[in-house]
Figure 1 (tube, rainbow, N blue to C red):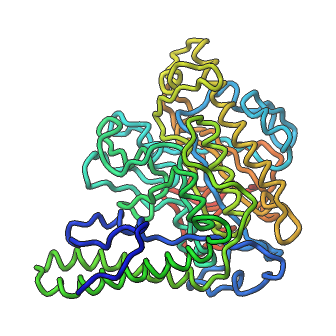
Figure 2 (figure 1 turned 30 degrees about the horizontal axis):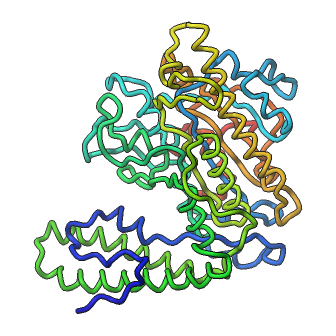
Length: 470
């Protein structure tokens, strides 16, 4: 049987199925696009789409989309400058959060949240890998640098399984760091733990995309604006041809395999069928949006520019209702990146282990504020975007910004540095500094998932209930 003709810019069809990397193949043929949120679509089938049993669409009381996103910054924070003075609505921002001053009343600072599954316990070193892996899962990561990784399903994917059907992307995973799915990284822990915060299953991370150009093309199509729709349709056709070829080839192969190999092949085919469903899902949406945004050239050398590009693309994805669930890993915990942009030549990890050295502590505070400046810029963009119901996209969002380490010097995982931005469509009470009495971080996620319409999920990781007065 001859494989279908594939345009020169497309990868060749898989030739040796048993040796394929299943995740690489699935990533290669994935389809994710964007659709604007228009007043005329409220409350159209997009927002009233059929939901899984027990789930409700992720919309606000006004019918506008409700969004949920998570940002992760590394290596903890300088505690002295992170926390504000005062509580409730009567508080003064600390030095680190001064970039958020113009957005007063549109975020809340949340204290007293813990991540005990990241504590050493009997596993010893590896706090950075545990912090990353546990941040959204609330599950202790199995200590291994082999293929037997195991942690838990992350909060974003719990929500995506319930509300992801309403958008082209069930979820969007982004990164400003390297991509690793295997190898040794942190004291006996796999790199998969340290470079992924989103987990589809206990053994399957959702690999984030670090290249802004590739993110743009997945969202809005490749090529010049006039050709993107045609390129998109051609891509769908080519991918369906690839899938047809793979399915036909594997049917002939099945009869020659032993029982164990047949089970492995069935797992692979399950992924192929999922891709087919995604292709059909993509075809059910309208034409691609054409945002007034220049196509990024790729990953810039300047780290601040890289963060801004990824934040911008995430804002566009949320605004166009391309997805309602997203994660952005700014850097893997333990990163030793230097910050020449702000005159810091030492690595971040080195500075975080300051042992009380005033100069290094000052540099950590400056790095914390550098990250916060870019986060504040992102929130400002969301606040300036008018949503379909007349409110801002920020008002109709729930944005968690935090780290799985609290004090990078001591590797503590209690009283984590967390900001919750957005109004949750009116369901949150921003403009406050609140402190809980040693509650699991996952209680926050369960509270936000409930607002997303997720039902029938009694807990996320080590959660013990929802947070009151949020």
